[in-house]
Every structure is written in C-alpha cells, then in structure tokens.
Length: 146
Figure: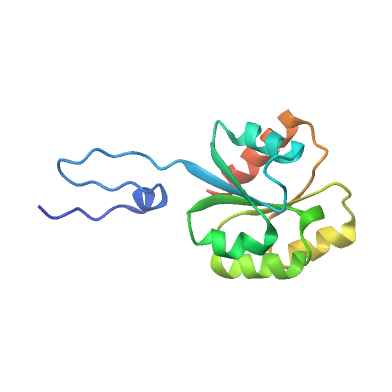
C-alpha cells in the first residue's frame, strides 16, 4: 500500500503515516558548539534542555559537518570557545537557515551583540544566567521559532 503524503506538521516533527507501522516521535535535538561536553556550562545547558530533548556538543571545527547529521531545533554557540564567530554564524546560516542560533557569552558587549546579530544570530545571552533563567530563556527562544 502506498504511503500517504505527510502534512507540514508531520514533516517538521518527523512523523509520517503508513499502514502497519509503529511510529515514534523524533526527539528534539539541540547542538552546543564550542563548549567541552564535560564543562559545567554544557552540563547546565544539557540539564535545562533535558525535558525538551537531547543536547549534542561539538567543537567549532566540527560544527558544519555535524549540522548535516540531524534536524536540530536550536544551535547554541559558546562565544568564548569559538575562533571566528562571524564566519561560523554565516556558514551555519547557509546550511541551517531556519534553525534558531543563540550565542552565549560570559562578557557581553554591545559591539559583540551587534556583530552576532548582523551575521545572523537570533539571540545573544549571558552565560552567567542561573540554571532556571537559562532554561526559561532557551524555551522562550524555541517557542518563538516555531
């Protein structure tokens, strides 16, 4: 029997219908670029996003290769661990045009905020947010993008 076309909702959520098949919803996957997987900030982000989905962590040198491996719901960049922020954001925007990009920094300035927004970031947050504020902020950014 032929598979029915999936609706835009199903396409976004990786769900399709076909007879006799059990379906699973794909989990939301978030990408954290720059932070080491074992860092305290990466652990905080992972814990705050746990109710929403999985967090994968990669160095900036692997970000573009990684982006093609999954359908990410959000990209978070640790500004302190990235060599060339403007190029990275521009390159990510080319391959993931609709995925929200959030830049997190320990020491925000208006100049760096302007640079990341001009190159395509959707939001700019302070890394020193407490865990619950970080979770609230990330959930708000995710809800705006849907």
